[in-house]
Image (cartoon, rainbow, N blue to C red):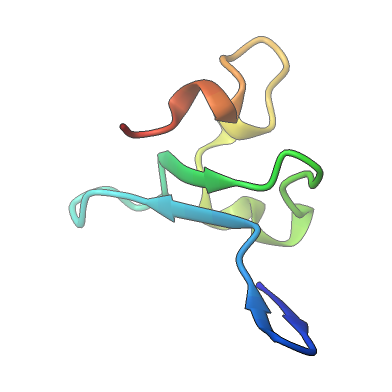
Length: 61
């Protein structure tokens, strides 16, 4: 989340089942930004793996 003069801007929203340790669903993504390395420990490794589907293909509809 970034602060701006007009409020806060959300770059990513992740979700997960409470029984799972890491976030596995990407609900919202700013296409102009990459997922920060500093949250890697909170999300599934597939968001960083080139061989896996891109995070944008995991949007919930």
